[in-house]
Picture 1: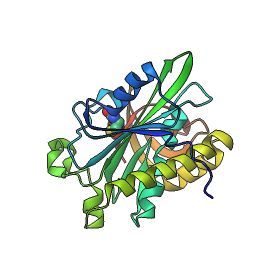
Picture 2: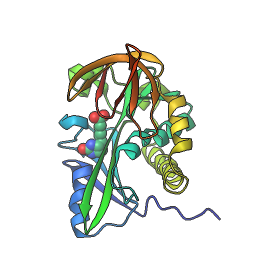
Picture 3: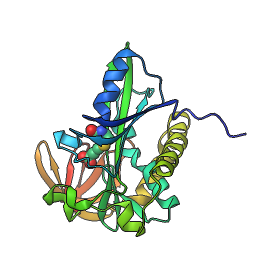
Length: 245
Ligand code: BTN
C-alpha cells in the first residue's frame, strides 16, 4: 500500500481566479488544511516575483500549495521548490534545469515560475507555494517581451500532455520533496539543486534592491544565497533577478 500523502490533503479547482496565491490566502482566513492545493484554469491577475505580472492564459497550469513549515521564513523553501518541478518534467523525458533562484528552464527557456509567500493566519506561519507551468500555453499569448525567453511542454514534447497527469505527477513529486525537506533537512536537496542549476559556475549579473552586482556565480550557500566572487571577494545575494547568465 502506498504511504499516505500529505499533499494534496484536498484540491480546490476554479475556472478563473485573480491569483491562486491570493485565493489560497483568502481561503486560509476561513479554514484550510496543510497540503491543500488551489488550481485554476486561468488567472485574471496572476502574480510573479517582485510584483511583476504573470500572464495566465488558458493552457497553463496555475496552482498554489498551502504548507505550514517549521521555520518561519520561505527563502529556502522557495529556492528548493523548483526541484520537484524539474523531477516531474524529467519524468516526462524533458531535460529541465534550474536558473537561480527558482525558474525552471528547458533548452534555456522558461517553462515554469514559482512565487512562494509567507503569511500569518490563526497564530501560525503558512507558506503559499505558487507554481505556474506553461503546459499547452500558446506562447504568442504571453507578453511580447517574454515570448522569446519562454517555452511550453507542448513545444518541448511536440504534442499535448495530459494536464491532469501533469498535476498528479507534480503533486506526487512535491509531496516527496516536502517530506524530505521537513524531515531530513535541506542538505541533500541543496546538493541536488547545485547539480541542476545552470547559473553555476558562470559570470552573471544580478539586479538587486541595491543595484546591479556582477561576478562569477560559484555556489549556493546553505541558506540559499547565490555566492558571487568578484575581485577575490565573496558576496552572498539573497534576493534578485539574474539579468545575464
Ligand atoms: C515568477 O517567475 O515571477 C513567478 C511566477 C509564479 C506564477 C504562479 S501561477 C500560480 C501562482 N499564482 C500566482 O499569482 N502566481 C503563482
